[in-house]
Image (cartoon, rainbow, N blue to C red; front, side, top):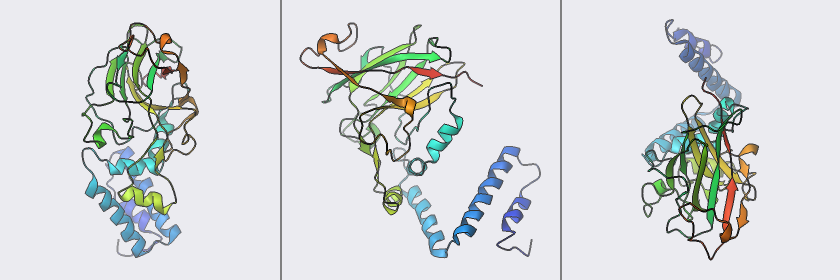
Length: 290
């Protein structure tokens, strides 16, 4: 095509695509370029602004490492990660929420009632619940991949002072679908803002704070995997999460209880006689696989 103009370049691009390309690839690429070109036309994008956009992408690539996923973080703070989550959440199941850039695969096994707090200071939190199907039946053998920040607000992958799998655990539930573990009360924290994503936040006049939360990935044969987070109702950033991860059904309540109320048979039983603990009961519902 010799006579390419600002008005026909989008159609010219689509015409260059091969007839035998995968239909879904054609759909995605056609829509992507359509919106990208419309964005440039609508905003009358300048060369300096185009170069700034390229510099942002190059900046993300420059600091991207195995432990620092700046592109994922960009997707998170722009709301894209949460939008994709919401597009594919099942209304009958627990809502999904962002995976985030700090998950570490291969966490060690965590027994029912096991402890992730270990030597760290801070309030003890007992989290428990049942993994169920949409009819309320327990899902035997479901697997929970659990992780969170340390009390300093950093994930293990961000902090050289922590072990690789600090505050990470992998639990398999029994026939009753029950899970239970102890940990330290999570804290609110800031997403990394020392890179290109931080520049975006500052340019928009936005803060980098996330409300405190626990991360779960729940899997079970025959069910749709769920990536989610749960948030306490009294967190100061609950209504202004910088990555848009909060959903109504993911908000829970910490209940303070005396040490004497701590359940028998868990790893910390008999070890918290001089202090209270926080307790939360949060059930998870999985939808059947499609």
